[in-house]
Length: 205
Image 1 (tube, rainbow, N blue to C red):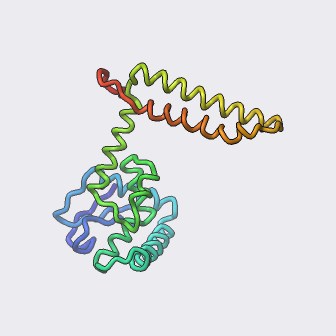
Image 2: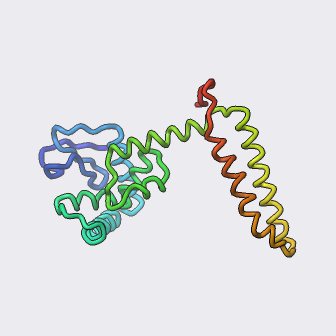
Image 3: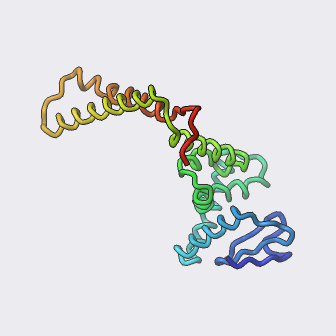
């Protein structure tokens, strides 16, 4: 990615700006690998929208986000509103998601009018890494059995329900009332069991 260091673009207070795939960086500012990846994602977004449409949509959404910040979230510090609105733009969220390899629901949950801070992102990324490590880790034998039994019961209940519906059979009232619990409780037990970890074994890479 072509990068130009200069004293004029972007304006004072900003580190860099991506203009039509060329990155302008303020003199004295350092670009991390994550920053460069972020801007490369923006370049890909621009190409998909033929550049001009990217900027039209970007600016339009930024203006809408400013209004949301002002009237829905009632921000009193007007100087913070443009930056908070910028953080909430879809293109910025998408670049953040792709750059940090996080699922979109995490970004959507913690980003409202751009109130997601860098320290929050570090915590979220750490929690997500811990969840993935637990998912891959070896389970204690007793929890393996719980996982097997819970999954089996839920799977059997789903199969019975689908079979009855497919056959057009009248389901007994007791079954209609109980089968959601027959599915949910064992499935919940299996799900929780999957996240248990045997302390004596290292998680799989």
